Length: 445
Image 1 (cartoon, rainbow, N blue to C red):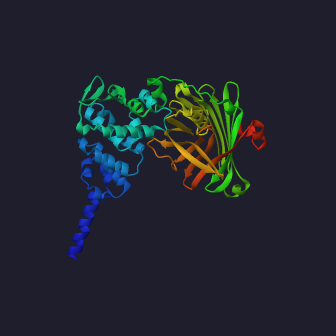
Image 2: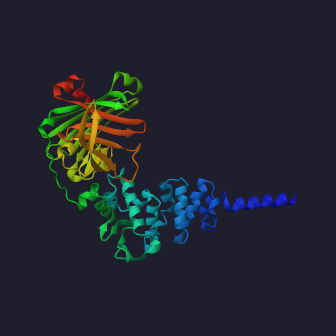
Image 3: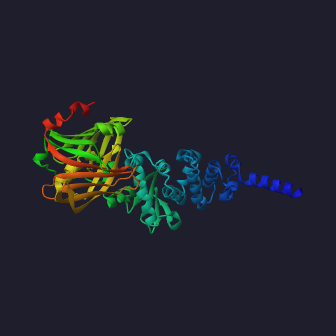
């Protein structure tokens, strides 16, 4: 009986010390007792979160790595984290080692909302404004860069001078202004720019501030103007429908109309009626406007965007700014862009999708393709994704062009459900395009 009582008392004592009291101790300012709790005793998300916060309110910054780990593993939001430590942040700005330790650890732990909330408005606008959907990618590159160059406070000797925190023997510094970070620099250049320079992928305000827009010269084959293609779409080996691309001269620009329709048979399985419209600048084939009317199964959407290539940004649905790299391209006009340059090769392509831009490397190879008993020798173009954040459902595709005429033969995309291939049936003029059920009004609604 005594042994049972002793066991119960020990259990109660352990519960008091390690569980259920973490939040209360934190709110009472008793941080040290939370820090001393073994990690294996922190079972709930709440316990992990408040034990993690305790490390940031305690003097020793060497426990902050564990603090970040606990907060991140607690599944609490980054906003919750910031709201609980915001009173402590101004103190860090007077201690160069603490500030650099904090922000680099935030990068290391992929807490990128925390990072951007430590920026001044000017710096925030430079690296984030219009970059919401690309922000994760940019920060991932910074994280890999910091790790690859051993830029961690535990290895750095830091000093503060002229509102700039510098690392001796390492060309790394943080500029501080009005209790916020006003710049992250490497070799006197903005770190986001340095990474963009290495990656050849300049986004938005970074591109506008640090680079010069160099206009390219693209001349289309006259046979492609006021003309189009009819594709047969196959889902695996099943013929699913048709796709039409039609390009016409609209005076100051080209208009590209893209229609995707499933057949009556396939409509019963999954009905698709997509109408995509683009305005392309004549001299360089830059996309200056896009509109999409999408109907796929039960999913319907209508979206549009205006693009300003020289200023590296676009306006999505008339109100939301989106950042652009040099010459972002929609995934349909890329066919004309590649064809116009053959046999020369465009090495990079930045694809626009909704509010985000995806960087790709274009790999070229010679290939022989057989269709309906005919052998075609041509050029296969395979886009290789260079971004950090995985594309939803992935991407694995290929374009194939005739080696003599440079006419497109097919485009292929691998999806999670199987191969989706569009084979060119024939070239069509405007009259034929309209006869086969296309209507300009579908692209305006």
